[in-house]
Length: 285
Image (cartoon, rainbow, N blue to C red; front, top):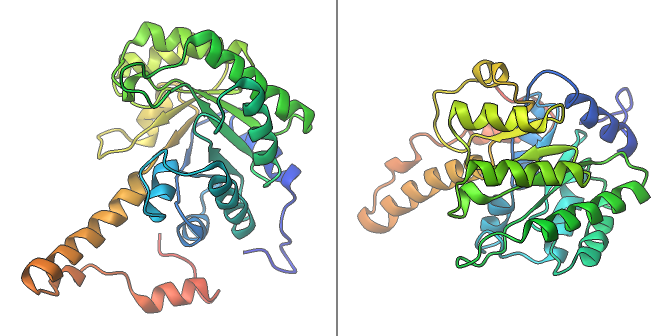
């Protein structure tokens, strides 16, 4: 954490650093869900972090997409305040019904000090899961306008959700991402793509703008093989939160169903956690 010798960076400095990370190479931007997980990941040396709408919602006892704008904004503010690396916000579809309202939501989000945010095109309606592309692009333009009015330093990510909402159409996804790039998105993201063909097709279609790849499950991919495909950044969505929940659920189920305590066998060391959060040690890599 910052101290007298290493003072906290300004919002502008973090936003400039975040943009620099997208200029070349490939970096990993993991997704913490609360202050503790964010500080631990920062302690491991990650250069930027991204929030996860699902992980945060579960921590509040709600389903993904079940939080309010006010809840999201408060969460972003506390994550920024607790860390000294750029924070990218999973800002869902902007918590708004219109492009004008998206612009207002993004203005408020920028006020928390985030370095970037994503706007997605899902509707939450299983029968009609994606917004009309023109409407979705207009929302990206509104988000771009809010960022430009705030100085233009924050990074805007355009997301197309077809592969995770039941419309895994590569041609449609590419057309949507290109429309969002034209509307002002700085980085493009299609969660759910997995194959080499899908990844390279999207990277080529939106070049030279960077692409974010979601790796949310155990995979044979490595950062080196992903980088070789031209991907600029990799996020993990709710995977870290789900991994933590899995350990909790296993241990809790053993307690509830069998009265057994061996679910604690792989528990983290309280001494290690206290040492890190007390500023006396760093995480073990």
